[in-house]
Image (cartoon, rainbow, N blue to C red; front, side, top):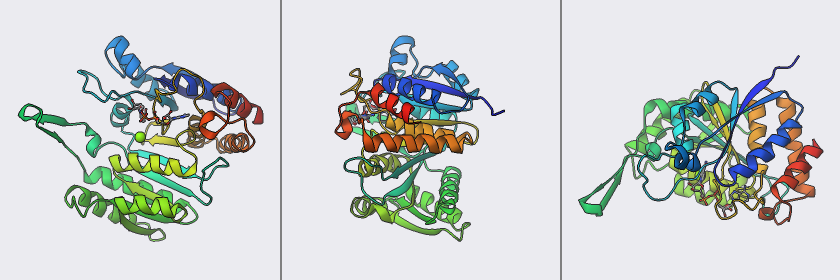
Length: 335
Ligand code: NAI
Ligand code: MG
């Protein structure tokens, strides 16, 4: 008898209310035993109850086998008492590795031969969110925190991942030329970890050059490890290489917990219209099934997704006219 996996579902804000229900109907057709527990987080939750992540949500994530998260809105102005839901969960649950694959899919604009993974440090850097204003708003300062511990475990995670892939290639992307203390600590620590994997071909690359090389010759890259902010930016770039945010998946992985989520945000420009692409969430669900040890179901779902992406119906971001649920139903049928 196969095991029933408990899955925490968090819609969050905006198109999170569309892509998570869509993912649920597909997962129900995926041929694995899943029990769903719903929890809340995000801006709407903050507006309703004064916190963007209630304790019950942390509990729900802690007591389930994996979590699928939609998206959460963060305002661009400072709001007293507010903190970003997903960034809080990454730190609170020590989800230190943000794993963001980008590979070619049968959709318009997707570059042939791309099969890479951005591994983003997920708990520190500039995303410790420590900002201050001085001199009546004339000067703003943000802290960046780089620790040996976090740099070592993300370096090790990336080197191990590279070791498990056919090309066994690792790029450590950094800006140690300008920030030799913080970025230097990250670079040297990650290089030290990678050296423990002699089969892995490791090279360091300055982040701006990395961005340019990714646009010109993305097929040359395999695993790229970098710090938090750089990884955030680079993974939207790599999503753009293979079909955009509508299909880009991610996993926030810790030693005890894992939260899977699309790379995209709450997409306020299209939220509520029912036309968002749930494929990014569904590819995140593929990663979740793999994480749960359901490799066969993960493969089936991935195949069904690429089948529907190739044949249609597609959502408007990929040039089609299907809505969120029509895409999801087509995937469920293809399973
Ligand atoms: P976004 O990713 O929400 O949207 C960027 C563009 O991509 C928009 O034009 C949107 O319509 C499109 N898009 C995104 N996902 C799509 C999908 N599934 N199907 C079709 N089109 C899609 O990024 P944006 O606009 O910069 O941020 C909006 C809000 O989301 C902000 O409050 C931001 O803080 C938040 N955000 C949250 C994230 C998370 O929860 N992990 C990640 C990124 C942003
Ligand atoms: Mg981002």
